[in-house]
Structure formats: structure tokens, C-alpha cells
Length: 251
Ligand code: PEP
Figure 1 (cartoon, protein in one colour):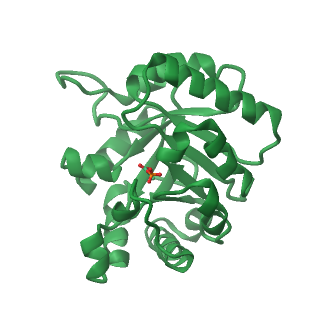
Figure 2 (cartoon, helix red, strand yellow):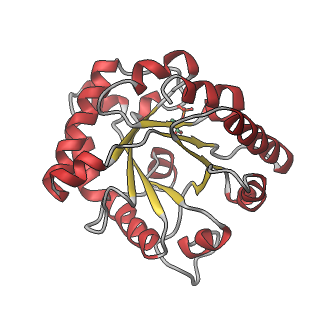
């Protein structure tokens, strides 16, 4: 199975109803008018999932959430379950994003539990890993990413239900990026960790996205690397033109 390039937008805590629907419609229009050979995914905040789903009707653009709980329902004020996301039409849920690991103290074990609950409800996951600036300075990048991959992907993960996103924490929203060689080295190392845990076939088929200040001007450099299978895009996914220009650089 060839790894199909994924172009995924993480809208984070942005967009009111009108902005979100306009953005989704704009992306849908541009995707429809061009022949892109890649899988598109948009992950708006929860408040926009229903209206963005409607705006994307008739397109192949997938809908995802930015997090989901490890339980199906119950006394968890403020949380959203994978069952609810499936019900509203989501196909994916992002798990273990560094902003959740930092803001909500999420660890690998919790991410793995969330992933199990997501799979049990028919959702696919984008599981994020990546080192902090300090860990990078200390030469721990590969060890940290390996630990996060081993700990955050449960035994049920496979190449169909799981996508990994390598996102160096220091590159998210900062305009800073690693070199292309650094990105390829980390992706290749992550693939080896996946091979050790899940076997060579799964590792060969599992997509690994790069995320961290991807924009139209640097997308090609990263997206043409052999072990990079797409991008998870924050800031640049909020402008349809930029989001599509990133896709155009490879798809
Ligand atoms: C992200 O939050 O997943 C991300 C990669 O953000 P940005 O593209 O803005 O760095």
C-alpha cells in the first residue's frame, strides 16, 4: 500500500461560526477545482464541527477533532467523547498534541487510552510526538520521540487507523523549523520504532506527517522527503490559499 500524502489543518482555538464556515467552503471550492492527489483533513474546534461538516458535504475532505476523551460518556464536565465525534461525522481525532501535553498535562499513557477509545468508536487518530527546545539542545530528540511513539500508540494501532505527526514543540507557531535532514532523520527513526513495535509492514505503511511552522514557502522542502507523508498545519491552515498552496507543492 502506497502511503497517500495527507494535508491536515489544525485550526486550534480559532474561528467563529462565519469564519469557520467560510474557510471550509473556500477550501472545498479550491479542492474541487483542482486535481490534488492527496487526502485532505480539517480539524476545527468542537463548536464548528457540525457546521463545517455541512459545508464540506459532497467533498472528500475529511473532518477531525483536536482531542477526544478516553471514555464514551459519563461525568466528565467539559469533555467530548469519541462516540460523540463519530456521531457528528468526524473521521479523525488528533491526540497528544504538544499544546494538550503542556496545557492539560497529558502523558503518553493517557494518549494511548484515548487512542484505544477512538479506535473502538471507529475513529482514526493523528498521534503527535516531538521534543522541546531543551530536549533538542540536550541531544534527546530521538530518544524522546521514540518514547512517545512507544508509549502513545496502543497495541491496537495500525497503518489504517493511525497517523503519526512529528511536531518539534519549539517549531510550533514560532516560524522556526528544523533542517530537512533533521526532519528526515527523525521520521526515519520513528519508522524504525514503529517497525520494532508493530512490524515492518505496518511501519512501511503508516503515515508520518511533519508539523511545525509549515508554510507555502517551505512545504516542498519537507514534503518531498522520503519518510515525510504529509503535513499537520496550524497557522497556515487558517488561510485557504496557503493551505492549498502547501498541498500544491507535493500533491
Ligand atoms: C500545530 O499546531 O499542529 C502546528 C504545526 O502549528 P503551526 O503550523 O502553526 O506551527
